[in-house]
Image (cartoon, rainbow, N blue to C red; front, side, top):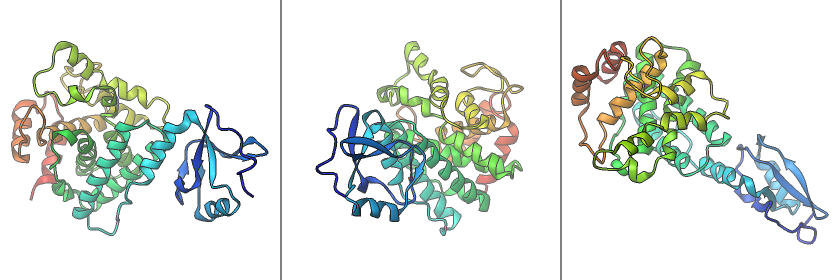
Amino acid sequence: MSTTSTAPMVTKEYSFYGVERLVDNSVTDFDLFISLERHFILYSGSGYKWNRMELNELLRAGHDQLYIRSQDLAKAAMYEAVVKLPMINRELAPPERIQHLEQVGAKFTQCLYEGDLTEACVEKARSLATAMTDCISEDRRCIQNLSGLADHDYYTYFHSVRVSAYSVAIAISLGLSDAALLNQIALGALFHDVGKKDVPQSLLNKSGPLTDAEWKIMRGHPEAGFGRLAESVLSHVPREIVLHHHERRNGLGYPHGLDKGSLLPEVQIATLADIFDALTSARSYQSKRSRYEALDFIRHKLLKEEVCPDSYRALISCLAA
């Protein structure tokens, strides 16, 4: 069957969507339609899983073009971005696999910052979090192979995936073994800075000190990130990591000034991971520290008052030769 003579006029409400853009074994989180007798008929709803046989049948039937609501084009763009990301090679040994995860995770974060936060995006984050947990559970010291080589222009993209890796390694060293909880920690760390989508790049990469007005914008990113995740199905732990990773044990953090008695242990783990990666990365306003220098800085400046001593000792055990 060909759609050439019966295709409806494409209006502002609908746009063409080529079948060749759909990927085998992927899930679309937007509706797709076919045209019959100049009418749009729903073919697949959000959450539909595709397979190669069905895609080939559509092409053989002459439905090389499906239709999408124009309001869903941003969702489609994110779907296409995440399905093109490389698959994680689970045959690699943990030291090599963690480097592969770092690269793929950075590309994922770039997609996240350049597009909308969609169900497809969250599902890809879940798969990355699971791969991260599996890799570090095999060998928690594989985090020593994280590169940390990205310059400050790409810091935001690499930072989140490294915070995820450090968080899982710390949690495992503390004795956490529940895979589901480890995955939640990894997922929360991957999304912890998602609120920075609302912060201008010029501000993120500013080399000089921030003004009071700029600090107000910057300090708004945890709540902005929490708001962006409001319609997702993420559980309590990832949401708390996103909202409270800048809180401090002495109650002097933000956005709510919570102290150690009010902060989840998982949040305190992610907080240390966030600080450690920031200290060991090249930034527009600071030189990169070695891991030893970063640990020494944390011990003398932040330990007990701002970060959890147990998590600090766990991080050291992961990085010990």
